[in-house]
Image 1 (cartoon, rainbow, N blue to C red):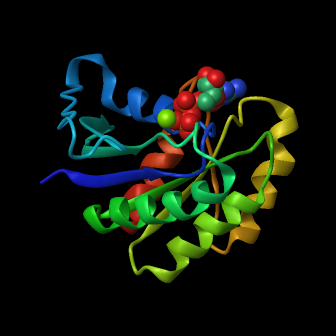
Image 2 (spheres, rainbow, N blue to C red):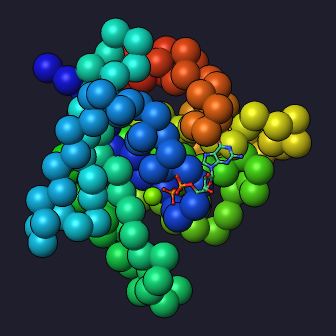
Length: 163
Ligand code: GDP
Ligand code: MG
């Protein structure tokens, strides 16, 4: 049975980059389900010996700020209800934002296990952002770089620990 992993977080933190990395080219069996789940993408994936069923949450870059927050909340709730584990991604370069706090609150209210990943951590300046992520109250952030494939062993260990 693959582990169902919902990748959640505000726009631009690198969710889709991570989704694509974990899916890999050969394993990606993307099921668009047109008209039904346009805000989510599904693919089979793998990390080490872990079989994954990935859910990428996407979109909303073009809607107004006001409806953005409510829609992202609702979408996140749907995605984590479908998943075994929520992988919450923040941007270590930008540090914690208000929108990250909103997501963290949604995630803390659910009883789904959460793994917190501080992405874009390939540069030295990202250290403060990784430390800031501790204050989201979701445990120890895993420093990763989805783009460069760094921190994947730590991510694997964190997933195993909660799955
Ligand atoms: P999403 O909106 O959360 O799905 O984010 P995307 O995956 O579309 O990525 C947003 C931007 O961040 C893109 O320009 C990516 O190339 C960039 N990005 C993603 N992962 C990393 C990373 O590990 N390091 C850096 N420096 N940039 C990244
Ligand atoms: Mg995306």
